[in-house]
Image (cartoon, rainbow, N blue to C red; front, side, top):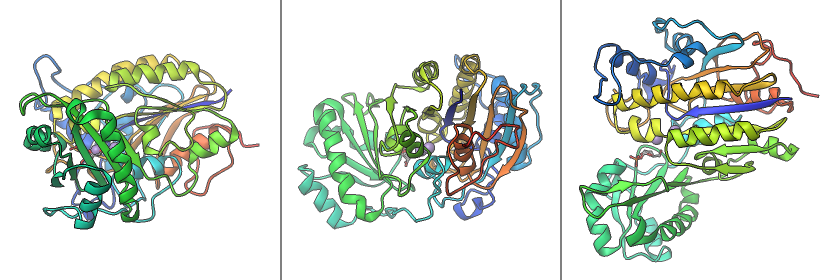
Length: 415
Ligand SMILES: O=P(O)(O)O[C@H]1O[C@H](CO)[C@@H](O)[C@H]1O
Ligand SMILES: [Mn+2]
Ligand SMILES: [Mn+2]
């Protein structure tokens, strides 16, 4: 019996990317800087957390060792490593530091082409596109049309949006076109339909994702985004690990936004919930249901959306600690033949300038009862993760990356 559980802590980078300079991110280190801020008492928040970062379960899987591999940081956490655990870091070869690039590469498909981006100008969208959105989306116009952080732009235009019914369209340094609209005044289903229309319109521009950003509340002070966010991604240009598994008849259970990220290709079942903790419940349930050859692929998005982009260090630290506490429940479900890998898709250093992702290496830590475990070193591509899962689940090797299963004493199960 072989099963695999892949948990992505969205944006939990560990620094050290060799090409960080090109992105203006030399020195960015999400994990390192959060740990440092906590150690120096700069991430205390009444009622939430205080003191040094406490993530003992991830440390026992080798998180601190992984940080040293990625960025040369000294290991300052002293928990013993669990038997059969393994640790290392991976460098991204895809050019984008965005969610689809990170996840697709993890699933064995590096993104070699360049995404389309909108310039940081006002207006940000080409006039023909804006015209088409209004015409084909049947809306009276659009608000925003610029680069902006999502919460700010809702504060700025939310009331006007409610009054005149124009959706708020904005973008960022990522390859995205985001549409914020009120759940009841504009309508949630109408927002989703509009996003589908816009998805088609931006396909020729190679825009990675159109994202529905519904919100509620009646005034500037009370607006709040809801968990009904939906991402409309372009389908991956080649088969991913997910396609390879489902084609063989294995189940791929997608927790959180994984289904959206892969444009629902190679996914057997989607289980969604609002917030990291509810998502963790879903992940545990999927672990209980998984059978031989299956993959549970989970994304925990709060780290990125709620804390990384908001540059909220204490919030990020608190979320890591809450996640780490729940990890004990996942570890108790792991048995012989199981492989659990924790990783990330890019960085989002909450101590960094701006509000965008940071180019970083990612942790690759995990456990597989019966394995020798140990150091897997620095992997040259995130695709090594997907290839290791493929190897563990008995698939033939894919086109990108290589399995580290043999390094940790696993048996290639490929027939
Ligand atoms: O500021 P919000 O709306 O959260 O947007 C963020 O979320 C987008 C998708 O993850 C990123 O491109 C970033 O701009
Ligand atoms: Mn992400
Ligand atoms: Mn993000």
